Image 1 (cartoon, rainbow, N blue to C red):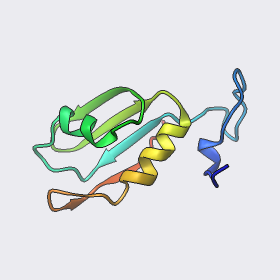
Image 2 (image 1 turned 60 degrees about the vertical axis):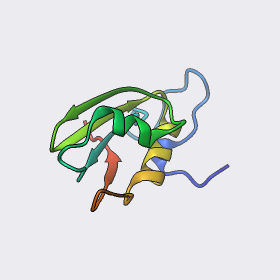
Image 3 (image 1 turned 90 degrees about the vertical axis):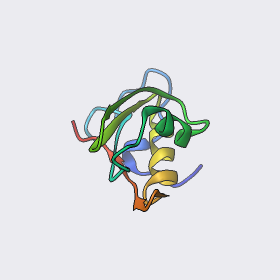
Image 4 (image 1 turned 135 degrees about the vertical axis):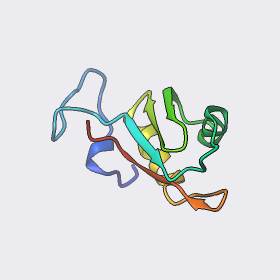
Length: 95
């Protein structure tokens, strides 16, 4: 198994135990191009399974994933990704 951060640990079905009692499924994407669209964001995720994308144009997007593994993969693959002259920031949402 991959060396995962604590918040993305693999859980058995029905197991909700982790350090803070929640499995992180929400990520914040920031430092995007000001004209970024929801479609462009969806295209970045490729095969990662997300539930919702809430875009605040010109500022950030909040993405809710189906599971913690997809959230972790999004951070791993897209944090620091160069897009239209900017380096994306993709980090776990803390709320």
